[in-house]
Length: 271
Length: 280
Image: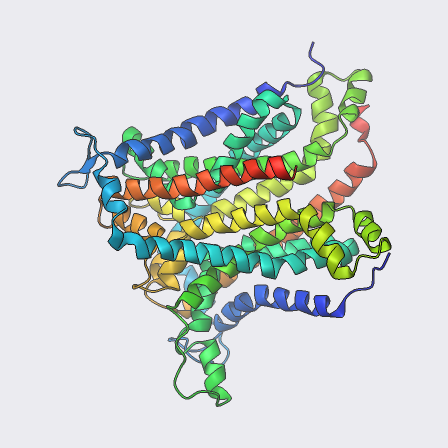
């Protein structure tokens, strides 16, 4: 079978990767630009970064964003993992309906979910908007993504592995805990990272559920961007890009290593 | 005692959660869309009527609807055309680095959508990167207007949602049994013919998934039309946002939102049904 790389296809792929990263690189570059109006390159400066620390609104918004994301990640990862695994084990009757229920939030435009939750919470809490409301909303849209990722891996697992655990004397819970869960770990981790990114990044659904004093980082940035391009926004953006990039790459290394091991050997605790 | 933890028990908590916080709220959109707005921006549900739908479907609103579909449709097409060769390359030649290459595709996606849209503002505005370069090398004297055009909106959306196309395309290309392609080649199919008659049909589920996964966020996106399209660019999503957050006419916004929802969810479910019957 021919496996020689087609040079044209390779060049094209490199170009698309450049397309994906060039705008972010330019954004980062301009965060070091010594010009208030950010029009042209006026020389290198690091001034915009220390200034962020004295911006109280920004720090508060960051704190709220992390608070929402942490709760949303924990709850949605637990719920989504169980759902993903449940789907694989379901018989065909309930499976179709549950699958549809799982897919619907992913195919619903964010703005629809935003207004639906706004109207729903207006009935319950009077339509003021709050961090609780934002967190509940984030959990709702994260569950499906975790479930999809976990299901993909769970579907590839040999059911006989858990059966073998049972035959060797593990309880139903023990077989799940020591056989299935370790095998699912990379997927659960990936699902959690996805949930974190979705929650941390979410602007639209949050917009409709935020109230006075519950503005998150994306909301803060959006309100600033509408008035134009500034080096401060570039500096905040650069920090966010750096944090997410580093954590994703780190999670990938951990996830990939554990995944390889799980594929090769059944963990000792299971036996 | 059960051999394994039951499927129903595993799925139940999420099913309840989604029923309460996803399905019920969607139903409320429909109820509110039948009401009228009171003087204080509240919702009155005394006399239910379809008036809001009547005004949502009025002829003067058609250009807005057309804008929304055009932007989302073009975004889907561009994403698939740009993404397919990349997904193919990663699957075929990625070797030991497949995972890293996919992470790199996803990395911009993990970066805030808002920040990525903002990056394009820096690049495309009148005194932005592109125009500075063009003027610098003397290709143009006056800045070329790039921001606040159809081009900038579609470019921004394609950039934003491209990873959503590459991932499902990669999954279906990677799952493809390449001995089938080899068999076609052994039976004297040309490279192009083997691609059109074997690879493409077998990866169709990935293409359709990519189309849905890019179309839906694009049609519901009001951020890109707002930041890269400027004030004169209207889309359904943008008007819904205005009705809810500034004009505070919830019933009218709910009617528009409900129509958007019917189109996207209905279209997706229909596509999935066809997909299951034809391909799977």
